[in-house]
Length: 324
Ligand code: FAD
Image (cartoon, rainbow, N blue to C red; front, side, top):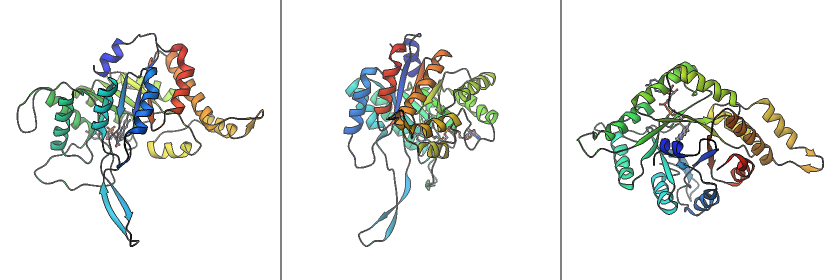
């Protein structure tokens, strides 16, 4: 089933969620990720996204103490994980596909693999890279996520890069940014390209994480005015330590409300003899966000889980009364 069908099928009165995971680092096995998924499955996530990572530059120290430049994908395995989770647990999975670091020819091969595996949902992204890979002249690339959406939709019509072939049936999601993408001069500019992704065939958008729901409401309102009619799924990441208050805005171009910083500072002090853990503060904040979204009619939230389920399990316990 595709993401839109999953959203249509659910009880419209109840709160549901999906999750996003990151593949383990190169050389690690899947054990921890499988445990994480097994912990969350009883709460019935509607689908599981798995992030994708292009090659990056790393400096590795040799036995002689010399640093050698290496270029490699630190966390490969997105499609393998999606297939493993789908077939082991029967849950729909959404692999992320990137423009950056991949030729259109490689993307076509990846899409053929996904088509054969029966994985029909993909999230089409541009990605970011510090490593500009040299592309052979005879190969082509996608510059923006919209180009990738076009390529996927062409395959849906049986138009492959160099030939006609079997029509695929991909359902394509894309990314969006309630506080705008870092490179966009303003929201209007960003929304123009979100609308383009929709016009080319994207059927839903997943948001960057945000910590003030007003950003999301304002973004949805503006998007609607610009003609974006596809569902815009709110993305939430539970903050579990103080450092994230600094690192998340830096990495993801988002703002942290003053009130949240205040709560973390307050939580780090002893409160009535009980030390409030940073995770409690983060879970309470995410709970308030989810309840507010629910009260505003948003019944589905996408959680950035990445590598640990502990905080989300605590949040889901609190959300039980509004869940199926
Ligand atoms: P695009 O839609 O291509 O937009 C990028 C920028 O270019 C925007 O500023 C936009 O306004 C502008 N733009 C778009 N089209 C055009 C055009 N035709 N002409 C001129 N300007 C244009 N990164 C990863 O590496 N792996 C992941 O798995 C991953 N998952 C993500 C999941 C979500 C839900 C989100 C929100 C982000 C994710 N990212 C991931 C990060 C994402 O790849 C980066 O934020 C990237 O910089 C932008 O990707 P995009 O798909 O939004 O790009």
